[in-house]
Length: 423
Image 1 (spheres, helix red, strand yellow):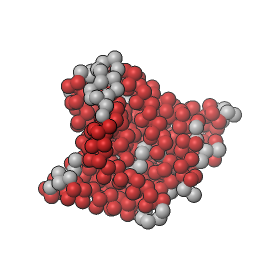
Image 2 (cartoon, rainbow, N blue to C red; image 1 turned 180 degrees about the vertical axis):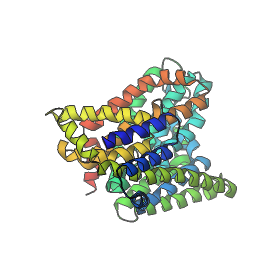
Image 3 (cartoon, one colour; image 1 turned 120 degrees about the vertical axis):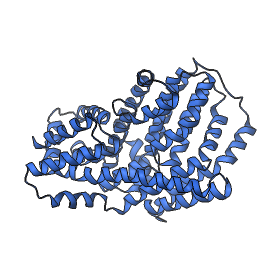
Image 4 (cartoon, rainbow, N blue to C red; image 1 turned 45 degrees about the vertical axis):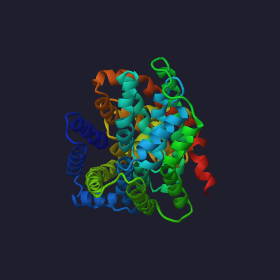
């Protein structure tokens, strides 16, 4: 009962507008006082949650996303995607999805993906004649790919919580991320072809020209994955490599970065890193209190007792994650729910990487689902449409994302195949 009360207090405080970190911290503090747990445990557990070398990668990859957006790489990626698929009827929507897939390989963040792709593609789609709500829906739903395809800040956070290899998680996210891109590409083409015709003629010369301009951006994800898997550097050191690479390309090659821009980007990186680490700081104690009262074991026992069929249990877990992600910010949700559900993996015969990818993919649907739906709200603002219009437009995309979650859950090869090749 104490665990249920803790989550209930947190959800109520969040619903009335208390910032997530404060809601989590206050509810944890109240629970510890009620359970007569020494308050020193609050700080020791919280500090332990952020005292991880792998989490040092977070500010570096956030900074990389800033540098790539300001350094001209995002526009080059979009131009390349447009040369490949812009000639298809309704192809500008496909360019949006394709740009998100390509940019996900260098940004590490769904928020960075939204800002970089949405800032360019939403005005372009509106100008071409697409419905503004549709443009917002395509951008928001495809931006979820930014947290699946490596490098990914969310995968780094999950690895820090679960103790799984960051390199393995990076590989595990590739095929689920591409699956999301493929599924969204199909529905975007099907809906978009009814709105707008082809935007550009196909030209091999144009493909070659844009490929040459964007090749330096495409090198980065391959460099990171190769370096981590070969043991040349850790994920954290890879973040430093990515920052140096992005600075050199943006400043010396593309010549679109200035030092004043870099300074502003560093400040924004510090602000966002502080928000994420504060969430992790309090969420670690929150999750520890849940474990202290035995909620993870109760949840696992309750789920296992629902049915003798592991598939039924897995569907129930997916439904729970989809609902939970609607009300809790993704990083906080992953931090809270991971310790609760990790013991379920052995009960269902799931590889830890597979279970992790189910959790992350399902929770990401919440980033485009009200009432949290931060990516949807950002895109609605960029498209200058009301929330209601954006929600109506994104509904078919939510159905597709939920379907992909089910596919990821029931086709484990999508997650474990690439990591198995690296063994």
